[in-house]
Image (tube, rainbow, N blue to C red; front, side, top):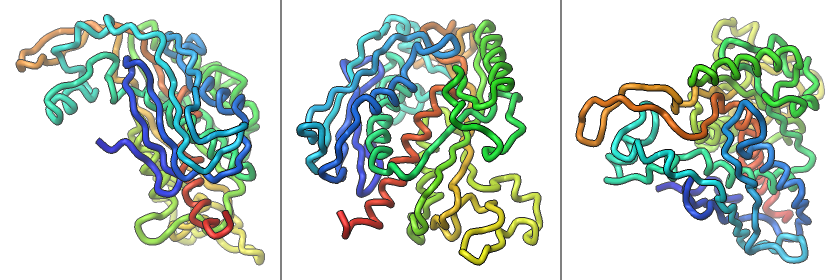
Length: 353
């Protein structure tokens, strides 16, 4: 299995949803970085389960324990090892699906590929793995302190913001459970998620991410374009079905004369339909993109499926699951963005570090 992401700033992870712990090893972190451990834990708290009524009620403190690579609060330049212990597993919730395949899950593909699977909470395919990414992303954020990365919920089902990110006060993103920086829209989203949850069903949505102050020059032709690396990272997130940057699919409706970003005399552009990236390289403008999340595949209602012997069966979903994954995915999007930008930062500054 491919358990690593990044080239210079590299994270390798391990663990399953209902194992003893998850964790990882971060390679490539420069020496002499004074870490704010409270800030790292705060990022984990933003992602952890049980934080509000509209997410899974699994209770995990998600406390990170660093094992190596840090001395007297500073990075040493060696590999940073860490673990996050699992403390609230309820593996019995998954005993009914031991020999069945849940629709739109990794159950069937993992079984066919490896000959067996850890059916407890999805095992390695669980989104519990994303807590590891938060740790690496939080460290990257502290090194990239001049780059401001802000993600927020843009839509839940058909309920969507009707404002661009420039019109929003992104400091309000954390003011509500759904992480939408518009109070009126957030209230509608929360009510919709609660209604869907009562039905034992789920709903999807989109997240917008904005990275400000990205230096000009991040990204490498031909196969390491900045937007390609961001897209690969975002499509790694469980339940993600789409990625678009800049004008995205809406840009296909414009003529070239309407879509081109005209230059100002200082090299900036009058518009930013390019999403801060041209030729795969950051141009100094805001980098922004959207990430689409499908409805969570686990339903707390009866559904038809097949078992390991190919028989048609009817199963009732059990356990603690998110009715909408989008709110908890906001910090995950930020973390992966920071990790990608950190890779390019190291590449551009390798002679200075």
